[in-house]
Length: 264
Image (cartoon, one colour):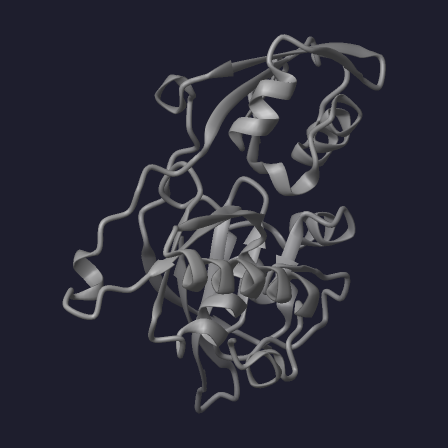
């Protein structure tokens, strides 16, 4: 049995981590690898941080394409005679799906697609990343079970009829992965709106709009306070614009803040 009390002490995602530990114990008993459902990025990071001490197990993540936010975790027994970096990973059970509809006069966001697929039988944990394809609908990644359930199905998203069809992942128009860019900016304060404006290259008013609409997140959590003071290590995520991490904060002689950032 795994030391659950120690592993879960102070956990932010306790119930989800307990389910991952159930899988881990099954792997230890059966020696058979197991894949988790799709997990949000904060849960993935907490799992890797807390479970790294389990030397008999290895954990890897796969979301269907480089840079995917929602991923499935593969738990398998670790071979003590192999370098962890040389361990092979079986193909991830992830399938592509298109959701087509005419949204010319009714723009949508990924959350709309997730809600529309729920009545068709797709559980939230069966769906990976979703990205919008202009006014024609969306594409996404899902589990094979969800793909079987959704393939060929029709539904409705508000007043628009949608049609679902499975496709190979290499048949999707995957989001472009951003090149990593490091830069710095001098700001009057460490406020969220100031750093987000510099990091994403947006006006302060546009950043305020993104905050009000819930599109801007801080460390993967929705944030509503433009005046929130950021610290080193904080990460901002903005829909369709990637992420910005605060690398350092240095007070200048003129009592302004030099902010070093990394954008992905």
